Amino acid sequence: MVVCVYLPRFELVVAAGGPQALSGRALAVAPQVGSEQRVGEVSGAAEARGVARGMVLGEALARCPDLLLLPADPMGVADTWEALLRALESIGAAVEQARPGLAYFEAGELRGLHGTDAATIAAARRALDRPARMGAGPTRFFALAAALAVRSRRPLVLDGKDARRWLAGRPVGLLGFREETEELVEPLGRLGVRTLGELRELGRPELADRFGAAGVFAHRLLSGEEGSLRTRPIEERLQETLGVGDASSGVALERVLGVLVERLLARPERRGRTLSVVTLSARLLAGGAWRERVVFRQALSDSKRIGLALAVRLLLLPAPAAALRLTVERFGPVAGEQRTLFDKDPAHSAARVARLREAIAQVRAVAGPDAALRAVCVDPDSRVPERRVVLAPFPG
Image: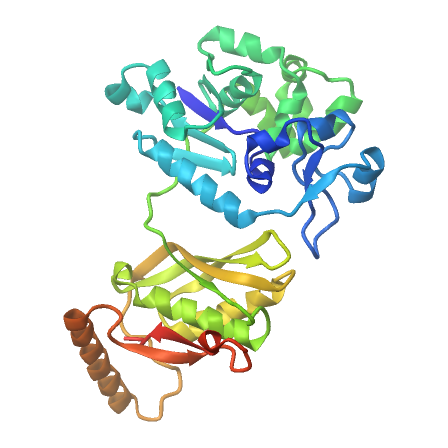
């Protein structure tokens, strides 16, 4: 039995500061600077006036002149969603995350802990400690349809032949919640196909001929032919945050990024592991946030190489930043010392670096992790003395 956890308008709720802020107000997530000018998630009041997610900004304002645009907050969305996923994992659930606000887990594996499927869903609701729609079914799609149909705190559980009979009467708009089938909703509406039962009666060969792979995938969803959940691995995450002050752009911002990299590499929790996937985030001065996920071609532990790879992403910042954050999402294997490609005297350099690392390790073991620091010039032209130089861990 698969359980679906759905939090409606999750990104908008985070940007607005809570679900109570959406009550009776026409709100929408503003498009990000430099991207296509289409609104993000919209509130119920905005939907009632004809505004929909993905609508062109000019059309949305024409339909609802008093529409209030909220800056997107990808940092807040990521932090809140991570906390909710960890809350679900605290009851023993192995979670598959579809997108922020939508997740699945297998209830059958938790019966030994909680007794029944209903008790497992109740435990998940208590762990989340916020309003969420929950449904259960034999596959992800059945569970999603059940969660979307719920209008109260009581979950809807689909099982047996009644599940397919119930699903046959649901609208084809449910296909829009799956990335593989969202493109089918509009053409099916033009063809007069209103329910999922009508779609299934068309047959798999006919759907394959008309819609290709998307049509075949839709028929498999309705037939209950989905694979097992792809649960996320439990990984330790490290992060460092630093306010940039006057160094909100340019070379000074790159120096701040270098300090963040060195602080992460100096964390004892890293235990010599390389970095494979990191997330670079920024809180913007004008409001809102920016977030970029970076996957290295090769797991790295050299601060210079990591800094060069991340400095290019700073050019994508849509506005001056107030604070930078660097988060390690996935670690690579433990690696030895990474040396530069061109070294005039490799033997002497390696021995010198080894002795220096050993000395730093001994000093930190005696006096603590902040015993070996170095001064990094961040913003020499700042009027605030504390912003001119920042202390960073000495690479060791």
